[in-house]
Length: 296
Image (cartoon, rainbow, N blue to C red):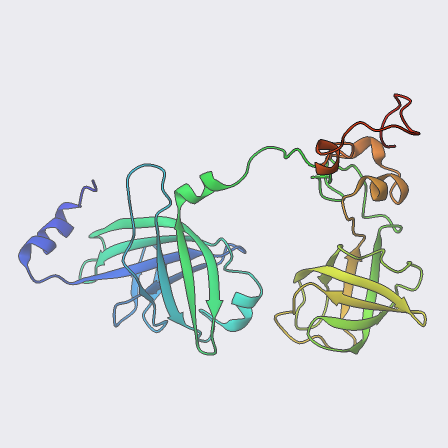
């Protein structure tokens, strides 16, 4: 049970309440934003809570135990506070959010109603809707390693051990022709074979998407020029002349780790784990019954 500050308790007991809700949001890039459903901006604790955002929220679903509490908020896509480009760029993904009940006459009279993070976000032409998840949501995330055939390390991390900053695993290019918001041709990658950058990371260095990161779906080499398709469309348009850096990709299989990267000793999967075909197999007569290992 929450304990109300004396001033807020008196306001509620008076019968003529002057309450509003405020939302303090910290994006992935640590930019702090404030919103309120009051009809005027409020300022406290050094944060301006803007009324022009059109923020509204559903009731808060809270329960005892470790169930994930939540609510849904909606708002307008307006100027520098909330806009389509920032949402599409993922700046609000997993953003930290705090919901407060505030007496707008005396903002010091307030209480935290809810704290959590932003989950699934859907966007329309002029508004957005976001799912807000409680702090217990973090307890639902997988922890530890999975027993699986594929590698669970990321290419270039400490568990993998490959230095992808070297020239063999890192390239830079410039867009020469744009097909759509996720497909284009580029120069500067002629020395790399087809598929080398598939599943790799592409970082835009110039242009409207500068600083944005996207995973490469397909990398091909056609007539001496790289053809790249990204997994998702970029938030802003790709233009001829945009420069980018890209790192090699890995499909996390034992064969790729051993043959392409020569890194079999650091493979973080279980490539010889028996599958369903082994479970359903049965004894038979013929060749291959010499007691040797089944693969490798």
